[in-house]
Length: 190
Image (cartoon, rainbow, N blue to C red; front, top):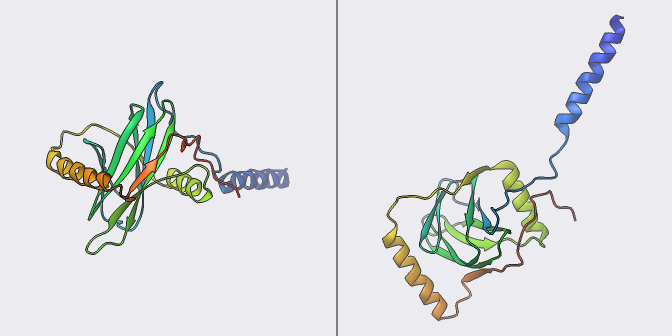
């Protein structure tokens, strides 16, 4: 009887260990409310101690610290996302209703502090799918909450710079096209 208890205990421990050892390979993501679009804004790269401030044209979305990502529900259509640190970087987006898109605010070494590079992620690229999987798995989600902070001066300067870049047909404005939608944050396989 004692040996049966030991064998049973062994199998309970063994099965418990195998459950904890399994790796997460599928991850559902938030979906937008009917008729809305959802944008995940990740923060990766250099600048661990900096919060990148992110905007949707004239709306302050928040400061994203390391180890967090922002989920922003908005109206579909044309948007200009931008982020600021030592520099400003821009993404023009055309969002479809009921779809999910991902932008990476990637920190890069700057002259004095980290600069930010906004890059739309492509669901067809292994590297982008892997990055999205890792961030959703390991970082903490923050849901956009409207802010009362007065950012009018920052917004005016940023929109002036955006218009200057636009008038020169600058390649410094990235494009998030409507077909760059994500269905999930599953672990990608090659």
